[in-house]
Length: 121
Image (cartoon, rainbow, N blue to C red; front, side, top):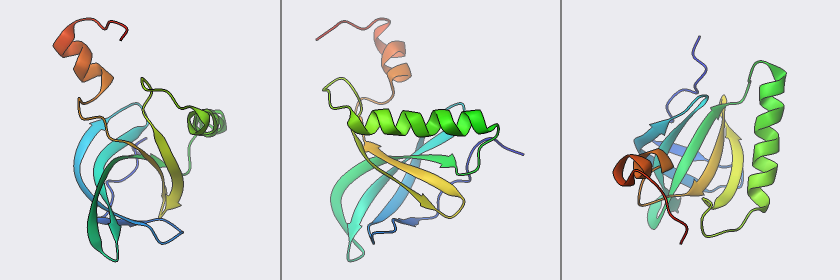
């Protein structure tokens, strides 16, 4: 049994009627996978591209699930130019989707590989 959620369908729907068209996988971490997606309005692309972090809704052990909920609560309150922007989180199917700002430079790991170190702006 995989710890990761299943890859998303081509269209993911929020409970509030917002849809996202998913495309390529951006990365995979310890318990989540991340895909590039574009917000749709009336089934048409809007040009608003985001990252969808996808996590299984049922996590074991329960302590891991609580840690994830705490992460969402903290991230939703943060606003800083050096922290990936949090838009919203919702459940769809068997997974929880976290809608995040898409970083054009890739992941922090990608940046470290390219630059070898990071300096403060």
